[in-house]
Image 1 (cartoon, each protein chain N blue to C red):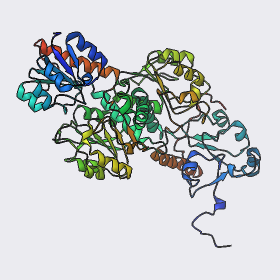
Image 2: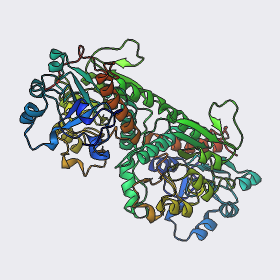
Image 3: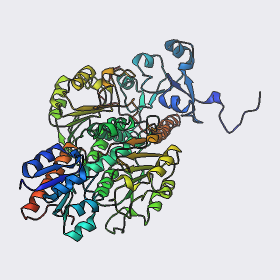
Length: 296
Length: 339
């Protein structure tokens, strides 16, 4: 399989790079100065792309790689992959679900506690209303943890889940109005872009706290910044931003805001498990075996 | 003299509650915080007299004392208060009250009960996640503008795979256990006595507990037995992947030894709300990103202060109304507390 070209957009994990190099011809895209020339030269050997939260396979890239068969993302999020185009061209797509659910949820709770426990006067977690947007794997894991702090869990989802005992709200504004802490836990799609907008922020209010551990573009960032600076929002814990690694400097001096450099899945154990999934999926594909975690 | 309001007792009729030093609540909210129509305060700290003189001159009829960590009730103080029948403390800890002397003289003691347990437990989890996932350090990293220039932050460690060892499975320890179970941790403990109804693994001493866990959480009271309980042997047993969290009392840990272990990388990290000689904190810890510290404020939430106010006032009012105390401390089973 050493002749199979695997294009990796960004450095993401040295163990992953090492393992890919043992099996394939790994092409480190970030080291290439003339990217379009490089792609033109290698287009017939590149059969796989390994992406992550920063870059995957957009329409443009897919177009210039005629022999692309599989996109394996080192993430659970798929917002950097043109899924429709992949479907159209029969390109397989895999991601890394489940292995990072717990650590992302852990971090959401860690952010919540860090924001509530301000230096001067903290707020108790017990009895707080936690509103979760998106009750998928990560949302449910956050709910389970918050329940142990005796928080009350409410949620918004595309459809109500009758088997879930938490209270459902049919839209995000109503959920925000009935939450002390609003946690974004859904995937990023056209519909959920800027799901946290001015109206939602106003509904959450000057005592409310926003926690975002999924994707920056879920939040209208300039609106969020002005709400925090003007104290129209009580606080925020953010692991993701619209234009990472750029973070609005106006937030740097705010004690009621905790900012992290996209470390949601950032544990040694998790990144290893994610890398193993990427490698496992690619191996399975090129050996004509069933994919481990296919999306398309 | 203006006629007095007949429906309220005059200030002169109200029984006194002695306060030696202002509790944290007074400092934060003002000295009206524990006011009641049923008693008045006698503030020793407002007098120019030294304490023994003050007590002899003004406090001989006093039946109740409101104490806090910074205002210990020693045997000497108790002996100067012949009518003392009740000590109410605003703190969770009781190590600043001479409980043996109280027991000897039939003086009741009322504490905070369990009002602080949830907030303490929240602080434990906050500190533990912070140390394992480097929350405070990464927050500083971003706020110093380093993410753009220095790139990705070093990886942390997963909480759910950690074996948690709780020293002291009282009210706080139990609340910690409940929370960490939801994160997937397995719980074990060491306590004065094994608790048969509890589903967690018991270890007979702190060293064995430390040898079998990845995160050691100190939730016990400070007594003669627990002073420097966490010593060189225990820290060594905890090992270089181990983390220690202390929200209980600083002297439970041999602080010099802890600092040495942290500097030498012999344990992974620490989350500390309490220290041996507060407010002094070993300056060697300031530069360590794997050490998260807070200024003894684990229980300081807005809501817990309100709960405290109710419990303190409630206990004092019950006492003066000859009703049962809300949160009496059972003195019979207390270990010996340092005076």
